[in-house]
Image (cartoon, rainbow, N blue to C red; front, top):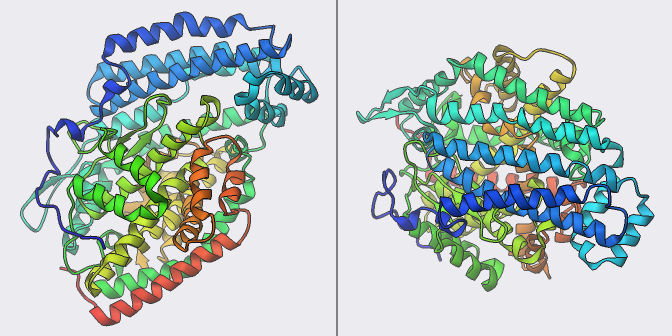
Length: 619
C-alpha cells in the first residue's frame, strides 16, 4: 500500500540544487577538452571515411558493410556530441557559449548528412534482389538490414545523389524557427507579474504558471490565465510568422521528396497510414460528449454554474494537493511499477540513483521536461522542472518511461536499430503514468483521496487524449492551409485555434466558456515546431492503456511482451511492434476500450461526488 505522505521539506525553488539532483554530464565527456577531441575526431576522421566509400558501395557486400558501418559510427559520435551540447545549453539558456556549442554540432551534423547523402541513391542503383543477396552473404549487414529494406520501400522518394546532397546542405537554413522560439519563450519574452490573494507576487514564467494554475482559489486562476497568455498576445504576429516558417520548411521537404502532403511525408518514415491520424481525430470528435460529461461533473464539484477555461487545471479535492520530495516521488514510482517485475524495478532504481536527472527549476533553465536517449553508449538523460506536486510526480513517471525505453533498447539493439520512433516512445511514457495513477487510486484510503486521484486520472485523459488530439487537428489544418497557398498570420492562427478550442470544450453548448484571450494559446505550445508530433501522445495513451490493462490483469505473457517491446527499439515499424506487444491501432477495439474505461471512471466520479458533496472551490 502506498504511503502518500506529503513533502517534508520545501526544496522546490532551490537556486542551487545538490549535486545528486543534477545530471552528471561527465558520464558523457569528462570535460570540454574531451568533447572537443571527439568533435575533431568526427570531423577529421569519421566523416572522411564516409566520403572514401563513395562510388564503391555495390562492388561487394563487404564494401557496402564498410560504408554503412562508417556512417553508423559517425552518427553514433554525432549523437553523443549533440546530447552533451544540447544538455549544456538547456542547463542555462542564457549562456551564449553553450548556445554556440549546440549550433556548432548542428553545423557538423549538416556536414555529416551532406557527406552521407550519396548513400541512399547509390544503394538504390541495385535491384532489391541484389540487396537481399548482400544481406544474406555479409553478417555485418545484419544491423543495417531494416534500413536497407525500408530504403527499398521508399525508393520513389529518394532523389539523385546531387539532389540529396543539396537537401542535406539545406540543414544550414532549417531549424532556426524552433531555436528562435526556444530563446524567445525561455529567455527574452517579458513575463507579467500577478499578485495572488495571499499577497504573494508571482512572475509568470512557464514553470511558475504550471505550478500556480492548479490553485484552488478561483479568483487567482482567473487572474493567472489571462495574464500568462497576454505575454504571447504581445508577440502574436512575430510568433505567427515564425510558426509559418516551420510549415514552409515542412512543405518544401514534402514536395522535394514527391509526397502528396506534409502529413504523408511526416508519417511515411514510420509506415503509419494517414488513416491512423485522421481516424484518431474522428474517434475523439465522436467521443466529445463523453469529455463534456467529465467537464460538467467538474463544474458540479467546483460548485460553478459556468465553467471557465482556467477552471480545468485545479485538482478535484477539497484539500490542497499533496507535495512530494524527489526521494518520495522515486519511492512512489518504484512501488507503482512493481507489476513490471524485479528486472525492470532494479534497472529503474539504478537509474534514479545514478544522476540521470536534472530535477529543479532554475533561472534560465529550459522549461518543460524531456528525456534524451541520444547517448547510446552512456545512458539517457532526463530534464525536469520539478515542483513537488502531483503533476511533477506524473511527469517523472512519464519521462522515466522514455528513459527506460531507451535503456532497454540501447542494451538490446545495435546502434542502427536502437533509435525508436516517437510513435512508440509515447506508449512507454504513458504506460508508466497509467500504472502510477492506478497505484495511487488503489492506495487512496478515503473518499477525498479517491476523488483527488480519480480526478487526476481523468485529467490525464483530458490533457493527453482530448487536448493533444485537438492540437493534432490544429496542426493538420494549418499545414493544409499552407499547402493551399494560404498565408497564416498570428491573427489567422488565433481564429483557427479558437474555433477548435471552443468546439472541443463545448463552448456553444455552455459546457466551458472560452474567452477570446485564449485564442493565442497555440503560441505557447513548442510541439508545433516538431512536425506532426502531438498526435502520438493521443495514440500513445490509447495503446498504453490497452497494454497496461493486459499487464495488470495478469494476462498470459503480457508483461514479457511489453518488456520485449521496450527492447525492440526501432527494429521494425511502430504499428508492427505494437501488434506484437498486443495492441492494434488500426482496429477500433483499443479506442472503444479506452472510451469505455473513461465512462466507467466517470461513473465512479459521479458516485463520489454524490458522497463527498459539491461546491468545494474557494472564491
